[in-house]
Image (cartoon, rainbow, N blue to C red; front, side, top):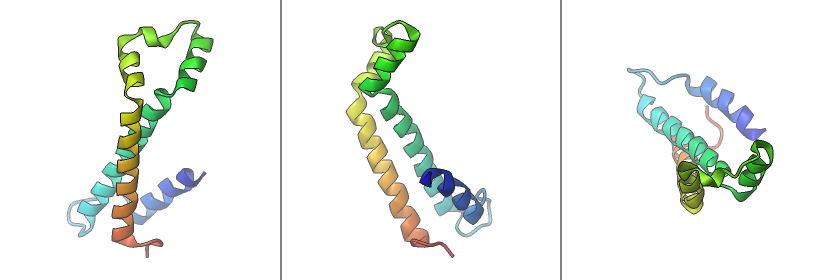
Length: 103
């Protein structure tokens, strides 16, 4: 729920960063870190063991037999690190830029 409220409020705070905006650079950095966080969280989710179980149950076949899926699954801890670092960086840069409550 927090994420669903965070995205529109952040968008209304900054809009799409444009050239000429003195804060455009930092807004692009915050946005990039947020996108990396979302993508790495998706990788974390799809490399979890419980997803493999559901996938096998609904698809009727074991997805680990696919080489690409097996590689993503084998990198689970690395995806967690990407997520943790990008999320904490997103929060730290946003806090350094605007504080807790942006004005």
